[in-house]
Length: 148
Image (cartoon, rainbow, N blue to C red; front, side):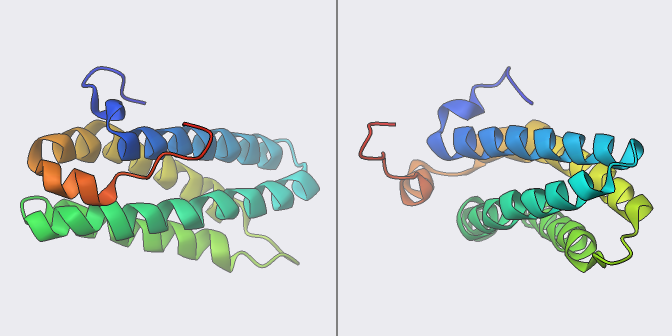
């Protein structure tokens, strides 16, 4: 994950980056389970990964990506990332639990890793430059009651 540009100081980017870390950890555990033929664990980890991905991508697409589309400069990049979301979700969501296609899962994990890298090292830093403060005000999560 990126640690050099300061984009994580923006609360939404910080949250999405933390979620990326959690997604990568789960995906890594899933990859290891498949490679070690621990398919029962792999099935549970696949469900956990989808449980992390679905709300994460919704937050990206309905918040940051919507603002970037409205701004206009990065629309092509956002469209490509959304297409990747659909592709990755499609693979993970379509796995037949009675006869899983584990090679397809491993391939999708590789795509997911590259996708996260693109967001962390490309889109997130660029969004800090491209979006006006008013956009960040609209998409910045409210602090929790615990003061986070």
